[in-house]
Image 1 (spheres, helix red, strand yellow):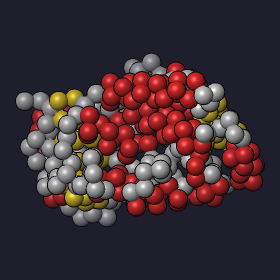
Image 2: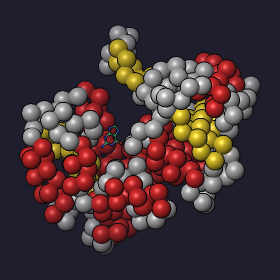
Image 3: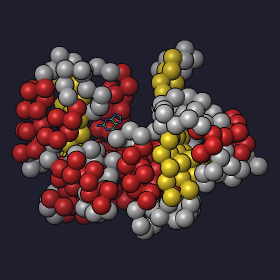
Length: 293
Ligand code: GUN
């Protein structure tokens, strides 16, 4: 039987509706949650993501704004913008879109953002809080969205073996931190595989849940899975496709045709994890506003 599709767009809609209700409750107290995204340079993919974030924030009743800066921006200039946003009481969430041009050290920028406004969950204080399990910290949006997807589809994680492929600070590492945490959506046994793992299939064949986050299409195929495994595809490689309206197409890390014959549930690309990332950003932002007021 082919795998059930995990509909990220539908779950994201539900999360956005909940965020919208929380925005209304804040508005009744005279608070409009503010999310400011900073985009440096003209990376095509980043520009699309940033536009989508601003649009989604308006739809739930937030003050969404985007600051666009040229690719030649210096680190000093960007840090000055972050300082101004940190001091602005109408701004509850700050997101500096990655990647940044090479003259700017991303860690210096991330550390400059006030931890209470770091709705990306990238600041070391929030990274630490997620690892400790302190609930007032912000978890990075993509792994937090994956955890919600698993819960919404009734995928048990307690006592299950999850294999994460990829060890990035944005997805792989925080994903492991969330899944090993005691409590709902956690209590898993987690293996992190990466580019130096010798026999990836040896690990994935022993997984109840496989989460692929490497940015390399075709990384996971059906024959690498235990029958009935749940497969989450975090990959978003943009490839040129003249038949697509935008001329580009997104490809996940998973070979969907073979995986969907072996897995019990699988996320599509697009329409799986992607919509959850923005929904979780909005959820982090409304909580930042609640915690600040
Ligand atoms: N670039 C790709 N994903 C992300 C994200 O979640 N946050 C930021 N700031 N930049 C990104």
